Image (cartoon, rainbow, N blue to C red):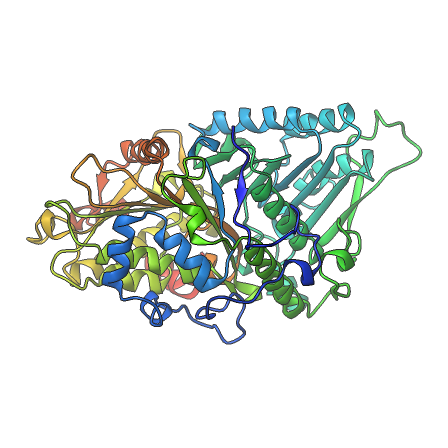
Length: 578
């Protein structure tokens, strides 16, 4: 297999990794920063028409995309100054289901020689088998390093002595203190008296570490799935395995380490009065060290002082922006090196970070351009382009919703949306107020459907012909399963059997919460590989198989879809947190 390539600036001598000095890696900025990666003034999303005003018209853009599937990913890396990675489509593999995801994780843990890095919302408190696989790998290989990044609120939800995510992984830190580093990110939005009033049952609404990155040496699994039993058995999600790509692995490993610098350090406390065999659940504590205990050291990575325990967001924002700028500089390459006959690099991967608390808004600058591309692309031989979008928690970010409600011409793209039926929502029949959540998402779904109807944008409804395009919503439901998938697939118009040439994969649910509160990492992937396009097509088709219920007026008339007034009021108040 050909070695993976990172796009490098002409004449650059920087080696793989992010430890190069700024003088070595930084090159002159080539494109205007129309959508700042971390602008203090960027309070709202730029629409793609604003973002691209200094570049070609949308008509020119769609024409260029028809000739080159990589056109949009390349344009975004220039406009937003983001890194861009090249790969062979043969390096990307889609995992079938939760069981395949779990078996792959265990297999990769066993094969790892140098590093394992896991970023997730949480690790299930009962996932002792996964912890045992990590322990075995560390015992077997004395040079193996393990880094874990989870959310502090979710990871410590259960109070001691009740088992929790923190107590589960603390054993690993106690056994291998020099080789295991565990970090817990705590949102800066919730602290002091507010945190005490809110309590543990509802505190996650203020923001979470939501990235799902699972790295093993130079192999990566990107997903929306967490590391707990339901995600390994009966909770539907997406899973993309990227094999043998050192540059992407280095980028994501460095990202996890960087976020760890402004997160709490978990330190296990070992009781010296008991044997190791008896030390099944060591005590633990969270310590704020400002990143001093990170690897590589803070000073080597950014040259910055340790982060203070409060008021660190501005410094963290600058660090993430500088991190992105360094990687962008290293990934520039003359366009001549990316010709269509370059068979080993038929796929481009553009990482998009969304960190609302830090004013990092890469994803919300990119998604509108994808939607605009679909809506503005003309039909070809009677075939319309198609944009497919799914989210397990469907409550679209308002700017995205506005784009889908408008069309510049009478004929527009076909937009297919898959969301979770109430029975497939992870909170279905939960006790207490959390049991209202599926009902709240029904209300959000109804509001979006109603807006589409008022705008005459519903596909094949209210007299609109399929040839005119429009938006269709379907609900996913499967007995005994819940739904957590999220993503975007773009199908260009084609006289042949259509398949997606661009997809968006990762942790984002495309709502206000993903945009403003959580830490998200996603990838926009474009490909010329027909084989990989077919894989993405099959992936979406599998989701569609269980999305049989069309959302229409009749559905909302059913007694089981009645939304109580108190839920409607709460939904309006808490919309940005769901």
